[in-house]
Amino acid sequence: MAKRSAGLLIYHRSDDGPRVLLVHPGGPFWAKKDDGAWSIPKGMVEDGEDELAAARREAAEELGVEVDGIFARLGEYRQTGGKIVIAWAVATAAEIDVATIRSNNFTMEWPPRSGTMREFPEVDRAGWFTMAEAGVKILAGQRPMLADLAEQLGLE
Image (cartoon, rainbow, N blue to C red; front, side):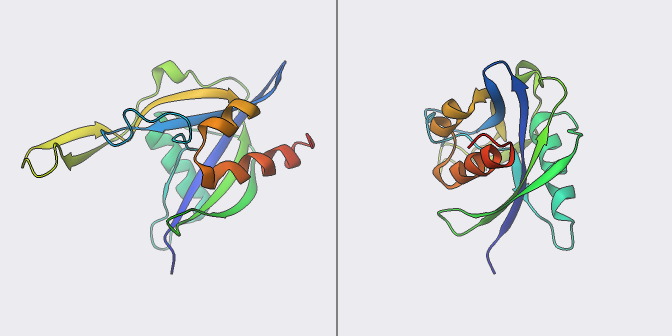
């Protein structure tokens, strides 16, 4: 069975249309990658865990803030590696301050085969993007989420 992740496509309305919140993965592998590297806040669903609860937990872990609102299921999206991401759209009343996000950390051996364990943030930054900008920044496997959000908002 494919691994399952759950995440939130957080958005708010602005004068130039909806803006979506994307996160950039931390760690040395992603350090110099930008376009096509960003993601919605998401993470693995634990055995027996409610998928929406997992999406909310992961967003809180990656952003350092609880996300509340009305959650509308967008769908399930198969990623290039085979993992399934279940996503919900949620509008925020106010913009989350991306300059103050506080992500949880992970530990890995770095540099490889050095024997040195280092800690890195799971998310090193976040940003608000127009739908067009997000289409460039987001991972290819998550682009359909943007189209589904646009449809849900009646933008198509």
